[in-house]
Image (cartoon, rainbow over all chains, first blue to last red; front, side, top):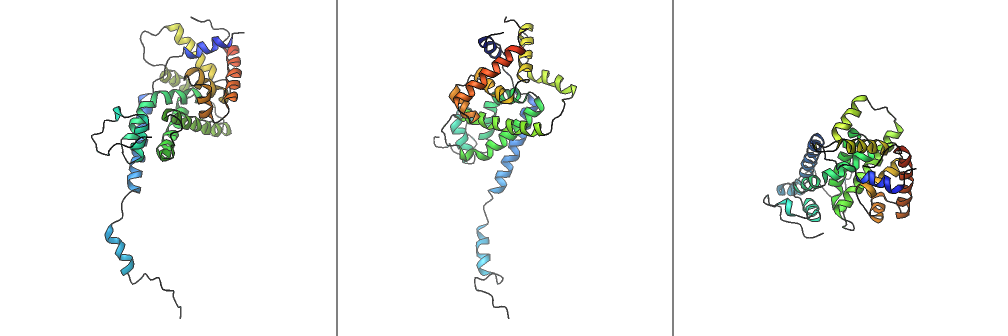
Length: 67
Length: 198
């Protein structure tokens, strides 16, 4: 039986791997999409919209008496 | 993690540490994560391919892992190196995918085997043919042992991690990593008994 140390040497002798270009391109595309998603989710609300809620006749904190 | 660099487009990402790149990404730098990913791509690909034993599954697992790392970066607490954190995320993505594949077994097509050779053998005109053959046989043998043992051997014997680091990546005790390595090497010793060291 081959000793454990020899197996380790075989494993350590394996050549280093390089990420293939097609995989790298796919990963870049994936991260670009994630960046776009993050940008879209970080859109600041228009400050002018804040007043709309208070001024709108459709909005009231009063309870509704449904008669 | 140190203070994130400014968000201006003039930041040279090559000069930033891994931790600074991750901090910059969390702070909103749109290019920082890509720079971090490119820096670690070869080692993460190597890990994914050797654990998955199939380039298509490895690419899928790596993609899952990068999305997860991108979204979870703010949760990085700096208790381990960024590279170790990335390795752990890739390993988790690989095991998730292996579990799904185990539930839906399939026989690889012949083209997969050909592409595997193409993708795993880097261009090296001076590579010794015998060593290359041995490397292919070692890679194939790795694919024939259990995923737990394979993952431990890839981290310890191929990636050079310590038992403690590998245990952190795998989420188990160092003693468990050690026993998985030992059992994995014993199985590989049988599978590779026909080889002679060069």
